Length: 638
Image (tube, rainbow, N blue to C red; front, side, top):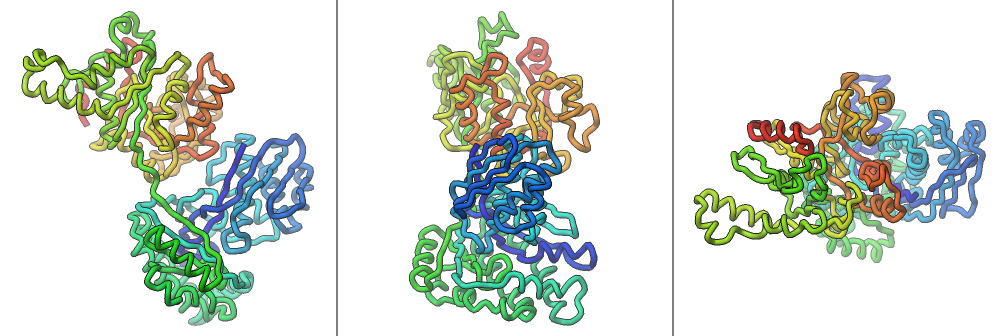
């Protein structure tokens, strides 16, 4: 199993993680607001289980760390300090809370600069937590991996900032809010590409001295200097950080650059007097005021604890960034890295598997494919089921649709969507019907049909679309379900909005009574937004009620209610990696290649969100269900 963990950079709100922690003593202080992002560099590792030892190899040293997987040995090692202490500290915490064996971790590549304010130690800690989580399927969320990384690091002599393990969230910005001992994490959607440059000032700073001097201003201010520090790390920084979040969400690079300049100036006024030997930062300010850079940068500021360690600059585009890097490296002899914050890829494509035999609707399906069964749409028009599903996909601004059909059926579907009626038939249609005919041909231009050569299960049907999808996220909808929203926003659009907010795969969910869940894929997890969005920790395929009661119940739901799959997904293209692995190794479930186990692997690798759709799905796969769905769908009103 391969794992990557990036470093992290504090974009705004430096020092407010620990400053906000003082609210447990002085409730009059402002909460801390910190905006961080994972870097584009980090730690790469291969991991596998070991029966009794923790073994760690890294490119950062020639020494191989090997220790028995016992709490006593791990705690002794953790308290020694150094890179191996972080590994041992996290392992100690995991072993304290879970039944696990050992691990073998080969950190074969590290392109993250160490001791430059980018939290290489935190990345190491999260790497170990993530390795245990995935190898032993501990069902931690990303937040859980972050927390175990933090617990492990503070088991060592290190006194890391509370924000550091936010690198667990990857290369996307997050807002962390610190209120005493409580930490809230909110993922920030990126509205447009933002081009940063991270600059190693090639100087030095004493972080311990900076923290020591600033901490003397807490928990209660005794003079104007201390009141100034508390004001900056409180209300001023909170305001700047909140405004920065809004600028990122709309992709306003110019506004974000101005906030960086404003933030640095406010930090200098308030904090330099508290620690002038470290925070006067002549090298940082030389960079920020360098004449040839001024016309090219939108803004800049220090990173992390500030001082002459690392700086961040923001520019308008890639060409400008390359020019700025050239100037910095040639004129100032400083080293640069790129950091790009990008919007989640737009979901342009949808896949609709429609290759089943329809055995439960036999013998009707001997004459008509179930996807072509008639339905009365909410527009009052009689149409085949597949058209209603296609229209649902288009309601989410999907641009291209792939329908997976049974071998030999392509012509049947293509004739419907691609071929208009003969002219003598077309002429007999009413004006409205002629418009509908033209409309069907028009949407047909957006549809590609791919044949599934053999019937090998739902997972195999989805895999047929691998080449067509390419390296893009895609919407997956079932070919025998209809969808209707309770609101003016379609079910598809609701799901896509959750994907755009979180940037991770999403499955639509519905609440289902305990006695019915044996018919549905079921998930569990932790609420990100109460009664709306969860971070999924397990997928279970049609579980029984006993297993569900023990493993799948979600906090704040009634005891007899569970979250089951609604029939719509937004998936990363990485799902094809796991499907291909199962198919190439002939890993079947009940004789077929299924999707659910691959969804769970995708969850372990990238995280997975679930969304309680504000709508209803209609199953047409059984005779009685088809009858009821046909009536209710036709009469549905928002």
